[in-house]
Amino acid sequence: MFEPTSLVPGLSLEDPKTDFRGAKRVEQYRLSEKALYIPAGLRWNYLPLSAVRSAQASHRVVSAGKCVSVDLHRPTLALETDAGPMKLDLERQESLEKLLQAVSPKP
Image (cartoon, rainbow, N blue to C red; front, side, top):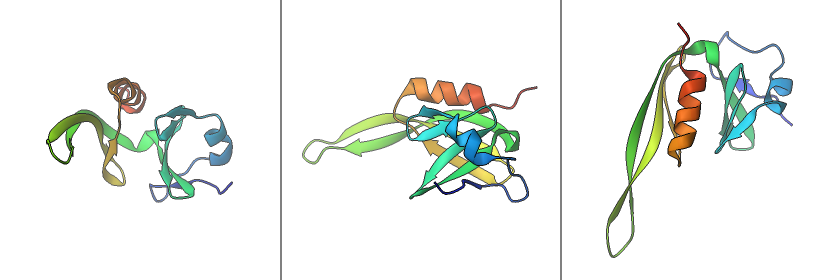
């Protein structure tokens, strides 16, 4: 396995491979106590949770259907991080709530 790469220059985990192995799956992402892992082709990038400045739930509209247009509302997690803004697309509301609780900055 390739070593995951930090999305925040100058901010990396001590042992991202070991941390990744202990991460829990949340849809296509992986979540540990220290980082959120994001797939990047055959590799993984990670966002250290300490780099998250704010997290906000939102929704996106996905159009489906060829003959009859159907709009599906899908959850999205909007993050403001030290590396800039990010949006993570999800399929289920439960996944959004789980990620939102985990990545939101603690006071």
